[in-house]
Image (cartoon, rainbow over all chains, first blue to last red; front, side, top):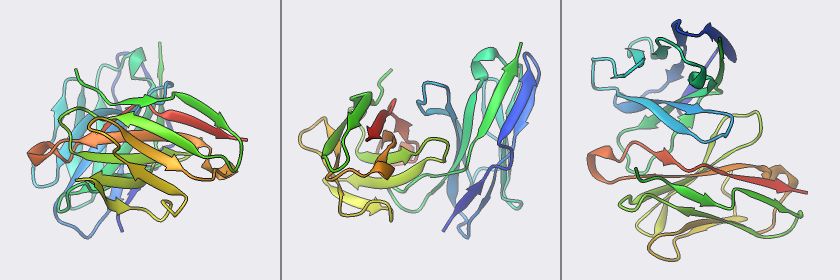
Length: 116
Length: 115
């Protein structure tokens, strides 16, 4: 079974600064997807960014980018130019590629605080 | 932009009662999911559903749970006899077919409180 670990329960960053959230995972599969979801106080789960394991290029979405290290099974999220609206719980998630409708496996989450 | 919707947003029920949580997935999506999040804990997978049948379920999804797609738009989760430990946020998600099927889009959740 796959596991996802987020070792930082809480992180804080100054507005306009950059912060990196860590995620590691364990799998015996070679092909899979990785995701970062954001959960603001409303508790809705919002997709931030996704990465296909077969792609070597790191995904980017505006101020959000990832550092995907497949051999190390590491998938960190970098938020540049942090904004007050970025404050939320961030979850890393894993999904197998091989089977349709496969589950997402989530990490424990990192609570990000953005200080003005 | 299309989105997943869920009703009700909050539900309070007595232990032993049946509850039905409703979801309207994104209209052209074919894969549907339920997850739950107990307060302060990680999000846990319950079940996935495709082509009118369960494609995968977790160990949490025991006989007290059932899912149904009663019509072309709704997807429901029924908890037959609620327990105190069923208190959680329940999220519905959906994903498309083809190359985009791996990305699951979540609804806003139903907060269930069992007393």
